[in-house]
Image (cartoon, rainbow, N blue to C red; front, side, top):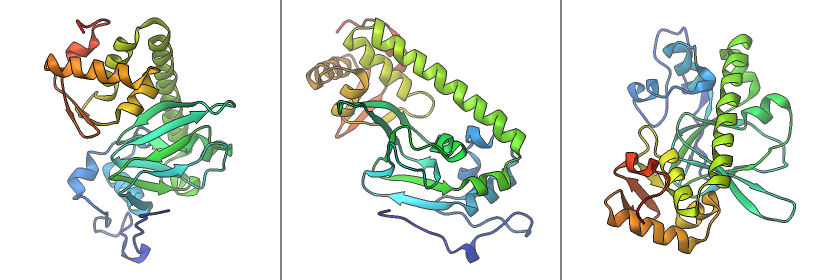
Length: 245
């Protein structure tokens, strides 16, 4: 993969050596704030040790990390940045299924089931990920914990998919755009690195509709726009089904 960064395993720490594991990019305090649902229930020290044994990968450009209908070489934990998840149907139509952020894991379903990838995952520019195998995951996470966490992740995805289906069926284009912006900007994600073309695919509408809707939201002070960036200033106002656009 392009822009791959590998740590020398000899320089990595491991749990029980008395010193903190060597981790890339950030100080330990920032790593401790990363709490993936897949690792829920593990101690801070156990999570650090797991991270240290993963393969860190940094992407300066958009890079495909998993390909639809192909085997999964490993799963990826998003440390920083975004991963775009797309699905192509038999007629060649592309749908953006999800834009994943820090703490989410891509490919774990396929990794544990032995199935080919259900969708294509593309790391967005300036993203940092950790790659890991099923063997490494099971070395650090007890089977019963993996099952519980895995079930919780699948439940969350079911809820997300049902919400997106409701948005697609019952809301006009402008409201779909607003609700997707609201969903993507939850938590600390006030600044979204998303293009108008991506937002149009996500909302199932034209780029012209996205352009006019974003312009109206900016005029109302609800968002700010930059080059490929949407900064949500007033998320509460995006929750309305119909805005005065």
